Amino acid sequence: MPPRRTALVTGSTSGIGHGIAEALARAGCDIVLNGFGDAAAIERERASIAQATGVKVRYENADMSKPADIEAMMKRVGEVDVLVNNAGIQHVAPIESFPPEKWDAILAINLSAAFHATRLAIPGMKARKWGRIVNIASAHGLIASPFKSAYVAAKHGLVGLTRTVALEVAEDGITANAICPGYVLTPLVKAQIPDQARTHGMSEDEVVQKVMLAEQPTRRFIEIGEIAALAVYLASDAAKSITGAALSIDGGWTAH
Ligand code: NAD
Image (cartoon, rainbow, N blue to C red; front, side, top):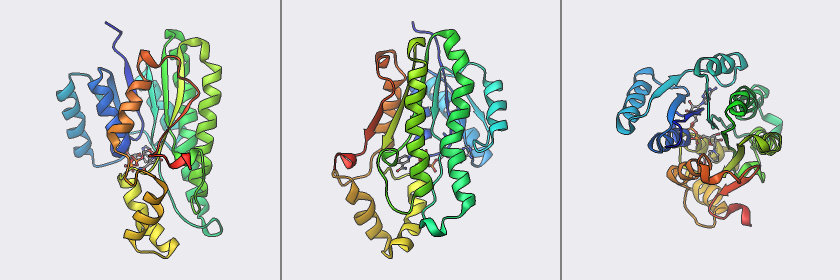
């Protein structure tokens, strides 16, 4: 039997992170959930994953934009064997009217939070000679789209951080990889449809068809379960030689 491992998934109260946390629980990891939301709903979700899978599931309310919160969470959690840096936000606006406070928040949550969680998780992983870091980047970690300056900059940064960490810990039994999804219909994407419609001067339906799915040759959204399955694989022993990779799961978008 492999040792029971603990997985921390940031931003796992919704969307992709929630799907990854559930899948890692089914794969036998104890889980630390994190993210915002209604306290009673989060508690119901925590209990339901624990009950369905038999693993330990706890919740940490750290605000990932705050390094002090991240440090306190990492101290409380202790050993983290699988770190999934997933928490993320988006804002869509032309560069000249992009609110500086949105730039700061996106860089803090989508990039700096991964730096802080990683630097704090690595010493324990090195001591145990095993670790998995899975960064949820984006197709926008590899290519750009207009009106997403902060997001594209942060996700490109996250891919660069992934590669650097992979090189530093390659001999310690630790891998670091980035998953680069195309569009997944989560609350993060649903919320940007009205903004995109305004910015592009289109209807919301046109944004879905002509902006989002036009990028994806498969012409459909990626499903959360597809990303969760890849994260579980990257967290497994079988993936021990995959490191420093930026793995696209984007319906062919970046093959263009
Ligand atoms: P989502 O909005 O459904 O979930 C985001 C999660 O992050 C939530 O749990 C939220 O509470 C949490 N979060 C936000 N700010 C936080 C903070 N300051 N501290 C702690 N938690 C915080 O979004 P999603 O679509 O599931 O996105 C998850 C990740 O996947 C993000 O990094 C996003 O950039 C990336 N991604 C999403 C898509 C997509 O199409 N949905 C595509 C590529 C990459």
